[in-house]
Amino acid sequence: MPRARRSARRSAPALAACAALLGWPLAAGAAPEGPRQAAAGAAPEGPRQAAAGAAPEGPRQAAAAGATEPDIRLTLPWLLVQLVPSPELWIGSGEAHFGIRWQVTPLLYSFGMNRKLSPWRAFVVEPLTRHSGSLELFGSPEYIARPGALGERWILRGGVRAYFPLLHRGDYLSCSLGGSAIYARERLGAAYEAGVYTLFGALGAQVTTTPTAALRSTTITLSIRYF
Image 1 (cartoon, one colour):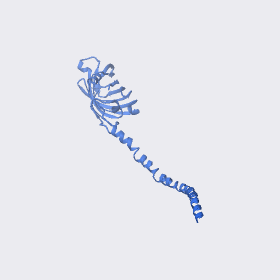
Image 2 (image 1 turned 90 degrees about the vertical axis):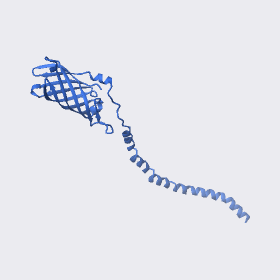
Image 3 (image 1 turned 120 degrees about the horizontal axis):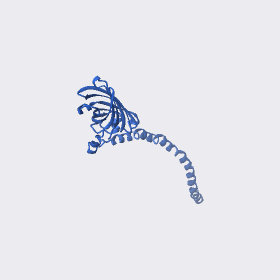
Image 4 (image 1 turned 60 degrees about the vertical axis):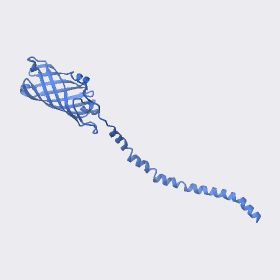
């Protein structure tokens, strides 16, 4: 009996070591199933749901929240720059004369800008707001260096003009179509115009025709806009 107990005591560590060795493969065989189930069940779906649910919406919400109204207002330097006229050539019945034109925009509605911002502008209008697509009310006094009394040299125009972008949201190239009522030489008439613009709208060419018999003429204007 003492010998049996001693042999049992001696064999106990060996049995424990064998059990540990046998248990390690069993544990290794069962362990991969846990990670597989975890990986197959939760891990792939979590990133997919996070990527599909939150990631795309985050930048959009951030961009929408980051849209701020531009700080635009009438300033003395801006008013002084607007006094610089655009040169033009006035072509009438058998005559042609040099002239100059000024531009003023009392009201503009932009349909091509960020919908989170106000589309309305008065007098001061950023180039992108105008040339990305807009509709404006405009006034345009002109002086024609023609013979006659001083009052007969002035033309007053007021009308509506629409701008449409052609390249790069209108920064590189845009166009316009418009119509106006004119007052010249104590007569009223109607005029129609078309224009193209480049360099962020700072430089352009406008062609205006007046079909009214008493005021029939065509005007080619080199449009120069300072913003």
